[in-house]
Image (tube, each protein chain N blue to C red):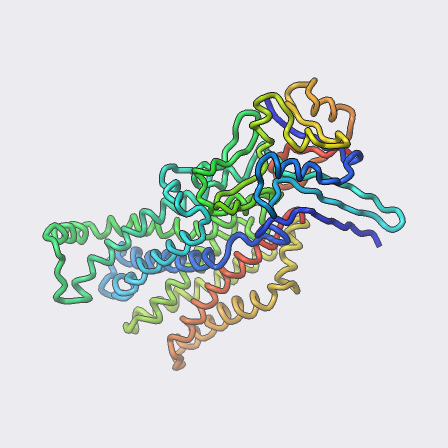
Length: 313
Length: 177
């Protein structure tokens, strides 16, 4: 039998026998970033279209999750750094070629803006809420007057943040699983879907839930299409891409990917949401939790499996 | 000026002297290596062929690590040498993920470390430590743009290859066959 036996003398920690540089921090951040981007996108969209009244949860209450998600995500990112005391170096340069630089700056903008967004609804959540300083009242009035402008900025930033979580990975040519341009749109759609799931879960407004369920069904269908296309691309690709596809088609990630992400995280909630719209009584938390769970599992699998795929050995 | 290295796979015996020389010269932490030996046995028994390669950072012309770096810590210096500035590195790991050769590692102090082509020696006109110690003299270093340099001379009448050229990085470590 013709064979090629390769022995490498290299045994660098976390590099060999397979790359293990990124741990739980990155998928957690990718999930929270996508979720925040999703919620903000819908909030900004319905503000721009002037439907705040019909979509109160989307525009107001759900956005309270965003600053928390972003801050936890930022903490996870910080914990992932290995030279932590130098993290400020991210903000002394703008490197247009580096997706991570884009991400760092986007987060720098979107986090405070999302806090400002939420702050304008504080008085509606806590009726006798008082700002400590007078100038905050003036600032609030100004922001509320310019709400649509803020929404336009946020919708752009939300799309960048949502796509960025995928592009961060797809820019790495060296990892064949990640190096597919479809990963950016896939992460964006998945992020929007998790955002929609949260809104469906917490809203008490029947009309709003119906609209968001319809959007979510569409998003899940798009996601299933993108996943199929991703695998078609792998199987029609070069040797390293075919080897990547094999990880999911009989390899070690087969069960986790198809059972936990595709079936439990996409197909099953898709079926439940469709049945619910048809009038069946289904606890709304079930599809929502499944979608969130699927989104999280998806990011863990992609980050972990990507580090298994390489060019040489 | 474009620094490059050519390694004669027919002369290399895989003694790993280059690995030890690098670790000593550059004070590489114990358990880590900036260069290493790979052995490839290919064919059908009894017609097998053995190739031994001394591998390291390829100091690519299109370095994905430099593109991935969010702070500019990974950069290219004169002669195409790819280097990392520890004081600018945040240890995010983007460059490690981006390298098709997995030539980088996370130094225990936190920053990312890799082969520097011994630029502190090269600046003084000397060869990198790995090249200097090679007992079979199978490694050649020098300026590719200079037709009379060691590396240009070595590659002149030989067949050679680079690793994973399909990764599109334009690597500059060549293996003479």
